Image (cartoon, rainbow, N blue to C red; front, top):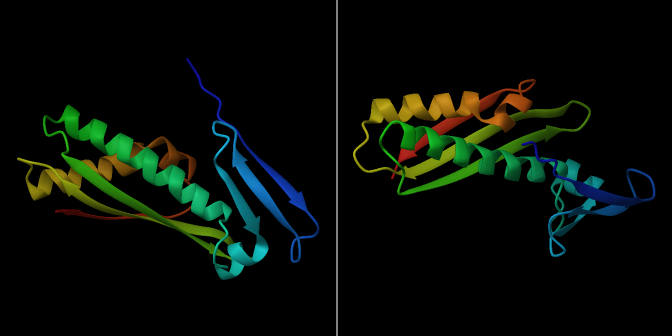
Length: 141
């Protein structure tokens, strides 16, 4: 069964001086103000498409990694995954860096690193981001 998820942005004005709000259609409470300054300069208090993409990538990778670990007989106690997505004005999205800290009883470092890399390659959001470099820094806590 396929699932289609939606988000909606309402934008007012031109790129440089305009602003908008992006809402996740699954939740009345999830609405984010967006501006060009937030995207190009990191304006405080506003989100940007890359932050939302990072949220999707970190959530998806967490699911893919936990599934792969359980399949290998070493389910995680916990995973903390941060996806840092970089945007370069005039160039676009230039990469996503996954930073992972994991508590996994009974796993060797070699198996941990191998499964972490496999999860990066097989995560559906990683596959969707095939046009940019995706790097991984994973450690056992």
